[in-house]
Length: 401
Image (tube, rainbow, N blue to C red; front, side):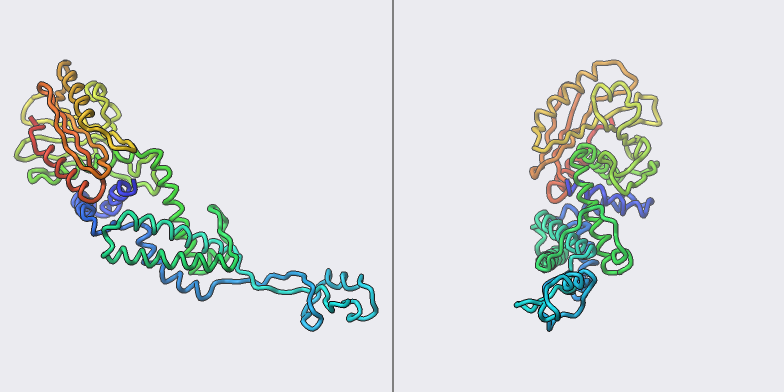
């Protein structure tokens, strides 16, 4: 799910240049196919930006002097408060030495250094979370151990672990999420930087928790982007329309962006077809409803009065690997049944995009005039490359007929 999220979030950077949106997104996905080139992530950015801040804070960690009352030898007494003087007045004896008793100690105010402040508790919470997130990132990119990013994150993880041990030895607690920042956390540059970085990591964990609940929606958006990139890569393809895409700062029900329908429209010069990529249409139509598909391609020939073609796209998602042979057989049977029904559209082809879980696969099933391709792909590495190649092969074949 982390890799799927990374592919979708690369759309945010690509949106900086709307004219070259799909070109930039395709370049980012091409880089993701190379596992020796690890993905950019929040922890990579923080390893580069927060590392110097941690080093600076380590040498000037804030402390406070806390006053306590303790029995103190007479020769070390420096301060008496009202409660100490009341205690002393109630002791038997005429002089201070007599009232100190055999131990020659009296109750006095003593100041001790204390590091357990709110800003240090936030500091401690940050280095603990950052070390865990860095370890998770390193586990996902073991094949990139020779890269600069891998070494950067690994060094940052070790520094965070060392700081966490040091703060624990100083009896510094760990702040809970949602604390109200004090003056130091808002005004001190170093502590403010750490607080903001901590909040970003906490927000990331909450986002991942939310995505696990809505991962099927996230996978559908990933599949839609993959289809758009596959069509855009055709030599004859020319984008003629694109929905406005509004990026969200936080996912809502697993979705990171809003768009109108269709998401994109392409003109195929050589084939003479207009292709619309439709995701979650508000009015799917009778054929798409029968197919129970949330995504589809609508293909029309503007030079003729033929019925529009519709390609149903299913995006099933599961924690374990699905048997795409069985899925393809079931889908082609449904498409075949649909071909027997009269309608103002023609549906003969279908496409299944499902997670590969490390094993890319592409199968094709036919029944009469119906045909369904099932492709298992992942969001990074060779399985992403193999899946995108299979998807491009599907797009290039005669689905435009």
